Image (cartoon, rainbow over all chains, first blue to last red; front, top):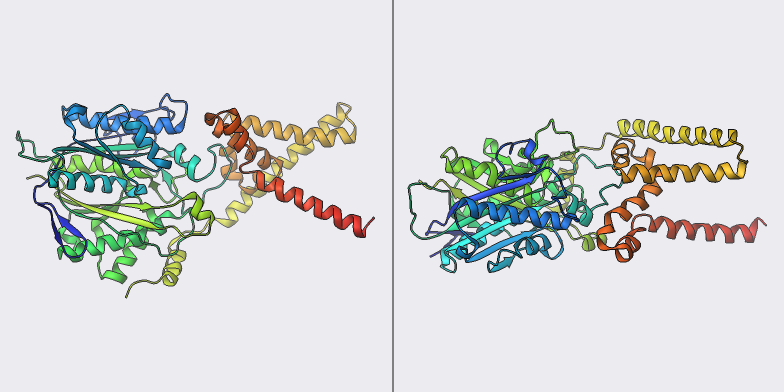
Length: 344
Length: 146
């Protein structure tokens, strides 16, 4: 049974395991850190579809199917599916799941969705509501630009604080019960859901700054509840703060919580693309698919291989609405943390 | 003590790199200048072909608009504008791109409610306030300078 410790953290005693995981992405995403690590690479950013929205739905479906394939399971074996994305009404998740026939719970946590869906699936497993659950998310550069910014072919300049939405998706298959076989998959041992945080940032081209306070609060609360220090973890991995947000996170944690992240911290937004890639990546990568693909394509395999043993994964989301920002509202943000450990 | 919104604002300003203003301005100067030179060359060409002054004044912007729409359609314009910035936004090329790009983007929602409803999504404010300013100027002119 799950146990609440401190104010915000939940310990999962049944050790839900991530028995399969898969990341998929576009050509640009396959060119950096995830070179050779993606289950499927889509060289054409339309994915053979006639709209960006449909293309993103295919991304999400491909990630879910790849995770199921790797687990040697069919959709009938999955009890619950948690997924979300950035598009209105989470449409990429809805259409991506349409053909799967798995009981579905749509989530909205902006770019924090990978951690939110993992946490939801882990709680479902822990409670016994599901024996097998799927968690996933996606983002598509062109679909996100169309919804939140300008048309793709519009000739504007992006400031240095802007980030590049990843065209990628990730999915994890979680299972409970007794482990069969001698492979030891990564397990989820603790989760910490964050609260909506807003320090008044209004610049939609500086999402890292909007999200850093939420990340700092969730990390601070988690370390306080678990009475641990950054040195107790091999990696403290934030979702998509980029260079500006990562810098602000370190400052906030030091000022507000007395926590020095030092060399334990890295950010998926800084990891996904390599600096030599041609596009205007500016402050780094972003989007639900950024942290999902880095986690499922690089981090989870390294945990499974025993290279990393304890990773605190904090996906961060800017809850930006194109309506509220026009009405002068600032950008609320959220961050959810999941502690993933090596199964040994 | 928790960081206040006010203090955080200062921290964000310090941590966020500024746009390279001098470099951007230099590139905008060259980009905008190139558009103007192109306009002059077109004017000279049309005049040599025998067009009168009135006709030249109409043909030059029409050519620039058509060229922009073509470059937008083949995905080249945004790559030029990424560097030229205001140099391509301020001339008529920017206006043409602001109409062509949403027209392309919203094709997937159909000709009427997609392209038709969204074509002035970016240029709409320019039309509304440009038209409004022209009316206001017209009234002032009619009242005082007739």
